[in-house]
Length: 257
Image 1 (tube, rainbow, N blue to C red):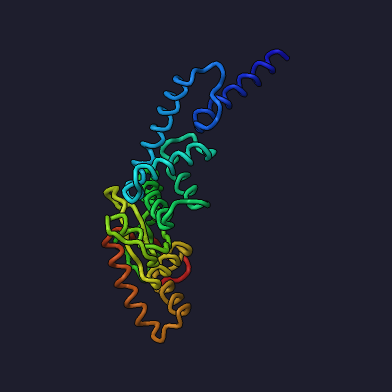
Image 2 (cartoon, rainbow, N blue to C red):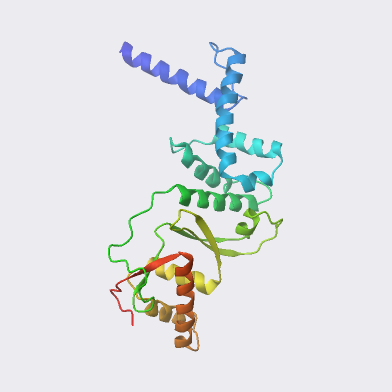
């Protein structure tokens, strides 16, 4: 009984101490001097702040120092992290920004999500490619294979251009493909609605041959000349393979011709 009481008391003191570090508005524990607590707070907060600044340079550049640190401070004080790993903390910050009250202007939350997507792709371990991968296979008779690390995403703002330093603020929908290429670089490609849908079909139906995927796309958009779309699609698929977004083909199991 004494051991249980001691553990409970220790856990309670630890929670109190951690809460006071996270939020300077909370009372300092009675057995810790205010000066020492201020040092602890500064050390912990600056550690988190440094991780976020490294992860979100474009977001940071669009905010004043005070606004940036205020946002980081609210996150530090109020967010209950679900990961013990520092390199995953930016993902939680990006998700937190998309919940009210978020940041003003509103595009900053989308910009953070885009920057986190880039970082996540850069840090993630790459899955092994399919055993039957054919790097130079026919993209119509074979099933196109996407890069092992990729992400398809839609945004209300041109976040990829904002991230390159363009002074944009207005809504301009963007459909983006992000992927990590064979030299470990994360790349981004802006897509038309049709090309974005084709990539969605490749991702959701990896067993289908390229020709069958393109004919399915032609049916979805009621294209008047399906065979013409197939030829245009072959060109697009070849371009995607040249960029490294497609890494080749694998045998189609549900019809490539």
